[in-house]
Length: 496
Image 1 (spheres, one colour):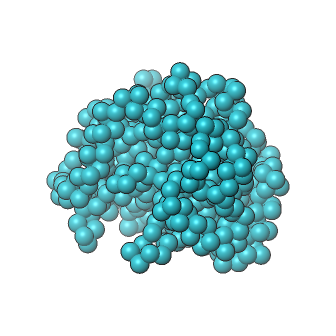
Image 2: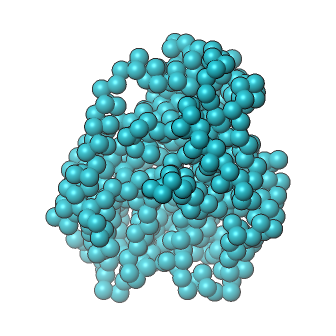
Image 3: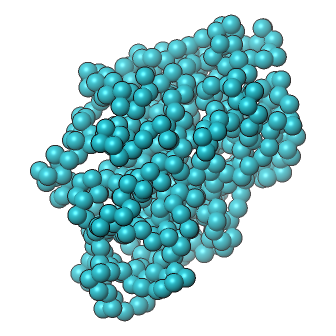
């Protein structure tokens, strides 16, 4: 505990955001655009922003819009395809594009620095999976959100779409694919820098790097006090609102906060690895993100994909993800993170989730035991003519999957979730995919939960409509608005 009476006015802020990745930076830019006078403090434990999950090599860089990700449209028990999640994610990504377009129009973002147009392709093999893909195609393409989706089984057409993938294949092999040309590759690390570069230096914004949050507690008036420690100084800061956007580190901070809404949550860390090819002659022959189907019994996080990526301005190829396990909650964290997160309040949830996910444990063990030759053989399923010497292994970021207590006991969830206190004074983002692509929608949810009165005010309503011309509309149910927003976004972001 620490003395909450030691805070001074210069250490008092309207909002304190912990973590300087894509989530906190998105919330920061939204708060600053809605009210430039708000005093914001952003705290980052590392020396610069976006070094953890937001860094380009630590994530897939896919602008997740459900164009090609088959796990967003699972087959249900009755044989029908569940499409609700696909439409939700597509709408959320359009909202991200909408914000970027608005900021670009104001000269506050340069889209060419972080955003590249890139076809999104689903690729499957064999009669059963082709039948599923065809059914998915007819279901999605009948709606305006996915009306540009194409389907083919024709090898000559596939050679045009994905020439590198088709090299060396028998013309009798059963292959099916869908394509949406309006896909994207995104460097979320560069985008994080762009957000913070815009607001850093503003009189109302302060960013502290190489700073740890040692403790946080709430007083009887609802204000939060945070004990900060850096190499140069220690201090206590105060705010009526705190956002925990520290990636895998958010869970431990949520537990330190002591809010009852976060007591039963646990986390399960999963690391990732990529195979990377930087050979220019190969990168030039592949221009798409190609998503396949997860192996039978494998978790959704294991969906294999072969991607064109732009990292540091250089075009390369990435394939993966290959999973691993580390008890770290952050890539640059402690091996004790997992063990420290186990409390009396969440141990039952963790135990119950563990019993239900024995197959996931077996999968991770197999992944850990996998040799480089075995990874190359997995890649060969996408690229029959590959040369192993062209590919190298790279460690990606850490993802902490959510474990929570439900009416069915403790469950492991693969998505993202906002946990907020009943008084709206604290919010935390837990989980991983689809994460960064839907950061804008998630942060609007935080604003609605924790800044509800402000969000209802005339001033903030006007500014939200300036940032999001479709604000308050359901673009999935209104084709005219959807197409108008897409045309606007495409023009302002050079996606035509």
